[in-house]
Amino acid sequence: MKELRGMPVTKAMLKDLEEKIRELKEKGRVPKLAIVRVGEREDDLSYEAGVYKRFQSVGAEVETKALAENVSQSELESCIAQLNEDESVNGVLMFRPLPGHLEEKRIKGLLKQEKDIDCLTSDNDAHLFAADGLGYAPCTPQAVMELLAYYQIPLTGKKVTIVGRSMVVGKPLAMMMLAENATVTICHTKTVDLKEECRKSDILVAAAGVPKLITDEYVRPGQIVIDVGIHVIDEKLCGDVDYEKVAPIVEAITPVPGGVGSVTTAVLLKHTVLSAIIINSKGRGSNEGKVCIS
Amino acid sequence: MKELRGMPVTKAMLKDLEEKIRELKEKGRVPKLAIVRVGEREDDLSYEAGVYKRFQSVGAEVETKALAENVSQSELESCIAQLNEDESVNGVLMFRPLPGHLEEKRIKGLLKQEKDIDCLTSDNDAHLFAADGLGYAPCTPQAVMELLAYYQIPLTGKKVTIVGRSMVVGKPLAMMMLAENATVTICHTKTVDLKEECRKSDILVAAAGVPKLITDEYVRPGQIVIDVGIHVIDEKLCGDVDYEKVAPIVEAITPVPGGVGSVTTAVLLKHTVLSAIIINSKGRGSNEGKVCIS
Image (tube, rainbow over all chains, first blue to last red; front, top):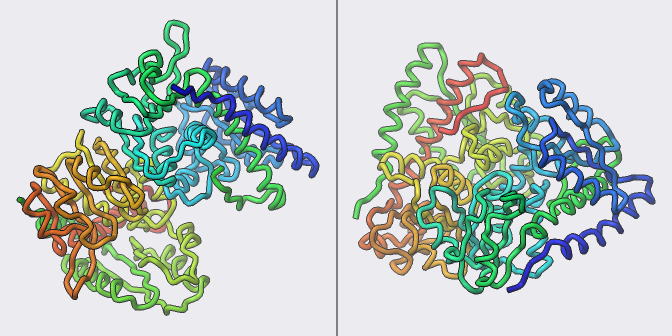
C-alpha cells in the first residue's frame, strides 16, 4: 500500500508559486487573500490559522474581515462590496455555512467572479458544470485533482465512484474528473448497494461526511482511495474511510490528517496568485477577469 | 416489452397547459415564444414547424426572428437585447450551434434568465448544477424527466447509466436524475467497457449522438431504455439505440421517432407558459424573475 500524502504535493505547488509571487512582487504587486468570517467557529479559526501560515511562508498576504455572529445581511453585503472594490485584494474566501439569519444566495450574486477563488458564485458554478476551463473550482475538489496529478494517477478510462453529491465536493469533482475522461458514478445516501458501487471502481472518492463509512467491505485490492472527509472522534482526527481496515487492502490511499486536507490551503494560494497575475495583466480594477481553472 | 411513447405524455401536459393558458388569457396575457434562427438549416426549420404547430394548437404565440447566415455578432446581440425588452415575449429559443463567426458565449450572458426557457444562459446552468429548483433545464433532458414521471418510473435508488456528457443532454440529465436520488454513472467515448456499464443499469439513457450504438449486447432483461438520439439513416429516422435488436430484450423502451423527441415541444410550451405566469404575477418588465424548474 502506498500512502498518498499531501505534503509533497503542497511542496511542489509552493515551489512553483514562490517563483510566480517573486515575479509579481517585482512588478510591485503582492497577492492578497481576504477571509470573511462570521462568528468564531472553531473549525473556521483553525482553518484560518492554517491559511495564514501557508500564505506567510511564501510572502503572500491575508487579511481577515471578522464579523460578529449577529451581523446583519446589509453589513455582510457591504463588506463583500468593499472587497470587490479593494484593488489590493485578489481573492475572497468566505467561510460557510453562514448563520441561519443570513442569506448566502444574495452573497453569491455579489462577489466578483475574478476574486471568487473558492467557487462561491453561480458564475463559477456554471463554468465548473460546463468544464469550459474558465473560473475557479472549490479548493477541496481542486486539491484532489492536484494530488492525483502529482502522483501521476491518470483518469482517462478509469472508473471513479464518488460517494457524496454536495456542491462543495461531490458534484464539482464529478465534473472535473469527467472532463479528464473518467467514467464517473455519483453515489449518496439513497444508493442501494453502496458497497458494490465502491468495490467496482478503480478510484474511490469518499466525500460523504460520515466518519469511517468506508470499511474493508467497500474496497478491493488495486484501488486508489481518496478520503475527503475530516472528523474529530474521541479527540482524534479521522476521515470518511476507516483507514486501519482499508489501507492494508488497497493499492494507494490518502491519510487523514495529512492527505487531501493538507493541500487545500496551497490551492487557495494558487488561485489567489493566479487571480493576482490576471488582474495585474489586465490593469487594476478591471472586472472582466475570466480566469482559467488551475 | 412496453413502448414508452411520447404522445400520451404530451397530451397530459397539454391538458394541464391549456387550462393555464386560459387563465392567463383571462388576465389579457398570451404566452409567447420568440425563436431566434440564424440561417436556414433543415433541422432547425423542421423543429420550428413542430413548435408552431404545438403552440398554435393551444392558442400560444410564436414569432421567429430569422437572421441571415452571415449576420454580424452585433446584429444578433441587438436582436437578443430587443427580445429582452419586449414585454410580449415570455421565452426565447435560439437554435444552436451558431455559425462559426458568431460568439455564443457572449449571447449566453445577454439573455434574461427569466426568458431563458431552454437553458442557454450560465445562470440556468448554475441552477441546474446546484439542482436548487430555480431556473429552466434544457428541453430534451426535461422531456426525459416528464416521460419517466408520466409512466411512473421512480428514480430513487435506481442505477442510471447515461451515455453522453454533453451540456445539452448528458450532464443536465445526470444532475436532474441525481436530484431525484438515482445513482448516476456518466459514460462517454473514453469509457473502457461501455457494454458492461450499460448492462448493469436499471435505466439506460442513450444520448451519445451515434446512430444505433446501443445493440443487444448493451442491455439485459428488466431494463428501461431511453433513447435521446435522432438521426436520419437511409432516409429513415433512428435513434442511438438499435431498436430492432434491443426492444425484444428490455422491459420498456422509447421509440424513435415518437419517443422523447415528441415531448420536447410540449416542454418548450410548458416553460413559456410558466414564464408568462411568473412575469404576469410580478408585473411586466421585471427582470428579477427566478423560476422553478418544471
